[in-house]
Length: 540
Ligand code: ADP
Image 1 (cartoon, rainbow, N blue to C red):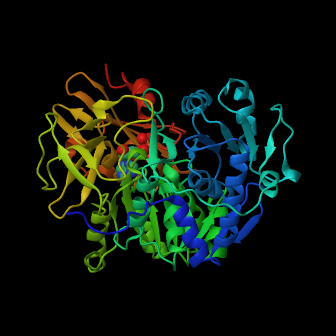
Image 2 (spheres, rainbow, N blue to C red):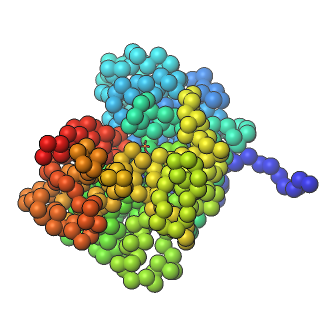
Image 3 (cartoon, rainbow, N blue to C red):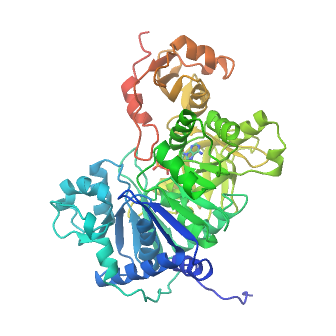
């Protein structure tokens, strides 16, 4: 027997309509690309989203068309999130930090019809504009006064485009399984792969991420997404904020410590989201000026493992709880979250930090398991480690226009990560499968070694890779970027690690470098480093 409930589709336009009706005066604040602060509210945003939908219709955009963005976290990018998806088209957020060839590949592969671009990226676009064959128009996200001189002909001004339209528009109603947005992975091997989110997956993910046991977003939260809107939709935070009416603060392109601190303080941010490197920059700046982050209650850290030293510094210097989260482009991205709890609050700090360093428990909606190479499920005992698989309504079941069926097994997605799961449900990432170091048949976690080494006060960044070894097949070497003005030797590093990790985990060499290479999403480019240092230990 069927239930007798209304089957109203979960649509992104519904989020916007809700915020406009219930929380019209709640604010959205942006440090614009142009440099100044822009301030408006959900009612203003909703009006402009309707104007945008009218403008897109006038440009000939219809359901299913891909609309590209090359843009920072701003109110205009937010309008595109809501307006493009709301009218039934697909907002395709292009990561400007990718190599130009990858940007070209992605826009052509997605066949974007219109591209919305921030002033910052015009120079990036100019050399490739002729080769972007699917584009029928390029809109610069600024006003007339700031329109650039460019070799690209026929650039459209965003503010003029909106000014010409009515703010009356009826959002269409369609199946909730319609595609809403498209995001490509950074593609460390091969071409980037497109992940196509639906309205349903986006709304369900947003609802789940607001829960107290997840990111705890409510009407009283002031959210600062530092994680870019071109990186898994800023972890879905703009949608989550909209459905709760939370105040939103967008940092634009200004993500250095001083700019973030100023914005956090001025807008009384309570929840900020970003990758570890962003927070290391902010904390170093706060140390320098000798101040604390007063308004912030929690920071969400994901995209890479949160080092213990980061967890500790946030707690002890700023009284901020670090919510460690794990996910990936294919998982929308929230898979597991390590939220605060009564049990955690009652733990001795050192013990709590150990627990916080884990990537957390699955949020309701997703399930995870670990399996061996034959696909046999492994014990949830916190010791056995294996391939991490995930399933749920906001997990990809295939890639956009690409067949990678090897990643999708019996309704589960193989994440490419290796993890443990403890009896109480906490998942801990051991490593990415391709980064794990296989020393004489045993495994060494590069992530864990990096994080312990990062605790050394003279060290700014660390990277551990496995390189060829005559006897053990592979052994770890540690690459270190020192903090400016610090003197640290190989012996110092080994002394520091001794006793903190198993003896056979100690790196065979410590190499000091000026900088480390990163992917477009800020992760260490270990593949390049492995190639470079492959023979480092041979013949030693
Ligand atoms: P890309 O795959 O394009 O590099 P993603 O953001 O999708 O970018 O990366 C997802 C990967 O990042 C995960 O598979 C995992 O290896 C890593 N990752 C994400 N969050 C964490 C975390 N909290 N701890 C450790 N690794 C993480």
